[in-house]
Image 1 (cartoon, rainbow, N blue to C red):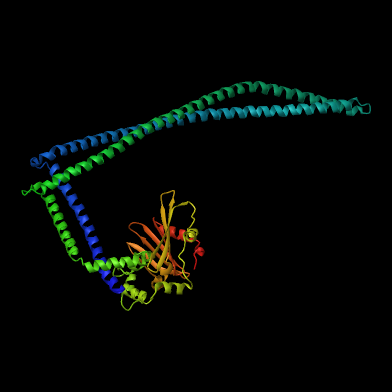
Image 2: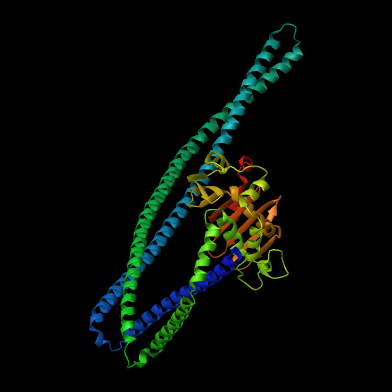
Length: 522
């Protein structure tokens, strides 16, 4: 069987397997629906108090499960009420302390206002006294100068008379200044006394305010502790309730299974009984489809499928190239998928997988063609050559690098895998594959990449293109958030990055940018 026939027959088996997988998944969905309908049937029979005396073995477990749930729900209501009461009490006490602090702060402000007024009064008197004292000192100097001048024999009599008048004025001014100083000193005594009293009162209000704040802090800590304990008890109650509900559902399902076999239908559960029968009928229909697909199994197609897988993933680098690119691209998912043009006659030079197979056949000796395209004898990359190309990314720890080397006839390949882990739990997988003497097999892929085709729908984003002459493949699954990013370098090396994150492609491109591809030999 030629390569083209292997791929044609193998793809038929792949299609059958894919359909079988889809139908099996559908059957599992139907099973879940059926199980849910059985639970609903049993629950309705129990809640409607239908006659289930024929199933005495279920009455006690159902009654116990119901009692456990009722007790837990009653406890939950009590805990919730205690929590609400505690939160209300906390608010009430907090408001009370807040009102007390506000009242104390207002009284302290009144005292501080009076204190500042008295301090201002005392300070004003002190300033006047300071000015008077300064004037007395200046007056003494003036007196000395006048007296010296009066004692001078050369001073005229008329001038001495003026000096006498000046001395008299100085005397009266000094007496007035001294009297003012004395009067202010007497007046300042009661003010100083009042200031001391007001300072003491202000300190008492401050102490009372701090006491209220400490009491409030202590109260809040105690109330928060009580509320936290109640929240913990509510969480435990919720976990026990879920566990009890799960056990009750199992008992409801057992009851539903037995009721579904009863011929005489109770009108109270007729609707639920019909739903169970309908779900069972749908399951049987899907089982019939599974049986039909099993009967379609053709051993020749199974054999071709195995050979196709061996060609694709048999240790010669087509895992990344063919599976990631060709199988994805050449298996249409939607009628309006742009990738469908790759398999539509008259649309593209690479029309189907068979065309690629024919091009591979034309290569003749793959090893010889590989070495011809590389322009030299190919020596598969060693671990010491591949390792330095691995990216070093800040915040990521490389784990378990694994080097493998394989041979398939005249074809030799090598690969290096490494995992990376971040502190937040994210992981990235990197694989560098040297296609080695099988590198000529990558040539047909270059036509696919050169078409720069992409799709972006509700399921996935995927694109193949070239950047600076380097073939690049991108894919992001919008359902499971898996991302992959691969490149073909020097028509020989396949480099693939994988992760699972919301912004996976951006992360993988960051890793790709950190690689030193110049270390890869031609």
